[in-house]
Image (cartoon, rainbow, N blue to C red; front, top):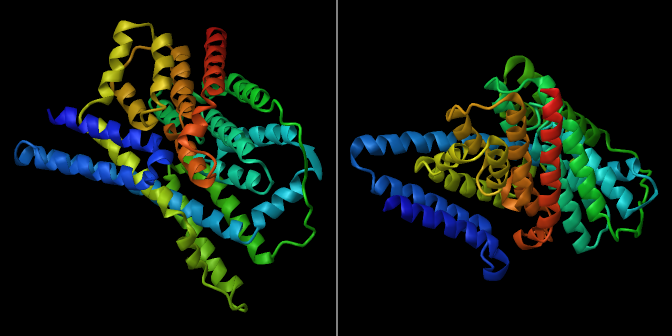
Length: 414
């Protein structure tokens, strides 16, 4: 009975996210309320001290995962908050982009940048930086929605091809299900799917854009902090590969370096402390993440995620993997991937590649299905669950064709 109540509360929480524009209740408030309520109920109705101790252990494990993501996001968003407030990112975009270009050309530039950048950086950083790129250009609300959908799909697609780009890809790699040469075969179909989406969404995007060039030189201190940001991203990549250092630790180190550097860079200028930029981080986004991950933790605690592995007993792996991708739009792909790996599925290398692509890109089908989607929704006010859902047909088509491309390549490469 308790399991049914908890599943009902989780379903209600996600439903309230969907109808946020109708009820005008912030999604961070609803997810945090229902996420904490579900865990409280688990403690209240636990059967004895041993059961409560188990729930306590699971909650601590869940909170550790949340804290890791929270701190990582906070450090990343502090960098971006500072650079945005100084106009550094907008000014950099103005210098890189041509003086005149069409919206269609900008769409392909953004898609390529998001895909490539997310392969080396994490999805959250790639989304934040790419959103900052289009924020520096004047676009209509409807067109911002198209750009947002493209960015989410491109970021998630680029992340699946390298172990540094997506956590689930790293999980499959560490479990010896795929190798780095295997993963590189995902690049052509994944990039092809992104380009197809750009073609579909760019129809009617013929308006010319004029990028105002700002010849004002960059402030030295802003350039230094931007350099620390870029250096932190690459250090995260290198340290994780060579020494298995968690990305959150490297980013917090980079944040500390930023604060110490600013202490000397700003010493001759009366200005607010750079620590104050932490307050400019959108904690509403972080609270939303907290609530969502608490809800997903409840689903994991009641063994709901294990039900997905039963699909492989009733249908071929190729079909089951495709459905796993669709499922990842509703269920966080990290616990879903963990459940699949624990099930000890007997799949070929080609089928593991299909699953890697599916759970990595399938989350793009709903805006709440990936970290990239949640970040984009918090940064672009035009991007809501409903407005993103209108892009669903295009996204499903491109996901399906990308999946088919991985299947074809897997028959020859693996």
